[in-house]
Length: 358
Image (cartoon, rainbow, N blue to C red; front, side):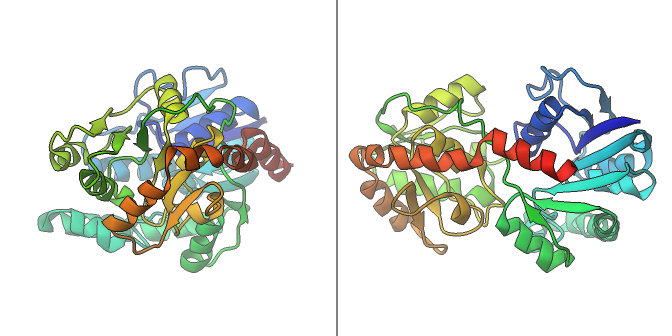
């Protein structure tokens, strides 16, 4: 019988769950299973363990989610060969319907938010004629997801924030193990003249409010260093302002350099699960302008490693925080930032996971 396998929904963008699954696979070591992966995905290129690609890809968004759920529920036959399985994502837990390792651990990034706390948000984003399809999918997935959760031997939450959601929506206990940050790769590289927005470009990251703030501050330079579904609309909002620059998605070395040379980073998501971006910023000695809700309450120390805006902040609050976070003030926070980031280093994460497996 083989020892450990990691299951992750899919590898498409450079998202945190995929990076975490790759780190686990490489360092435990473990085998890896996933619904699908884009060709030459960087999280998979240097893995030497056995991989199961279930080929559950589709170009039709909602059909793809249903296909993933069905595939994990009905094709994860290999699980019976493992002592330990660690599940990452919304759809991988469904594998325990027919298959299971001897010990099954869910690493929960969050209960599916389109089912629970953000259901109305996701429905309202769809055209009216598409909403019944999402409602039908939720009715299909929710009982199967909850049944799978009940079969787990242990649930690990990625933050106290997510632990509270698991208790509230699923009525289950969990332990907290923070996700890993490779703090050695994010380093201080000096200080240039820009602030850096590091949030993915979708509505819940509220990058539009950051842009509106910098439109009021033409003397301040903003670089927006990610991509996402809102890229074109945000570029239109910025209206070619000379102080706002978009990079779209970057490779790791480009990202390390931009973070390492920024004055500070700005990250204002709505009730973030955990939020790796602030930890990466602090690892590079860069303070964070964040928001006092979600996982950011667990990572950013107000006035020491950044500024936390009130939960119901406005554009003027962002402007005020940027004005307070001068280059000199940011440099003064450098050592505190670097020290705080060490609490989330990869070694601590792996040690905690190995203890859980034992």
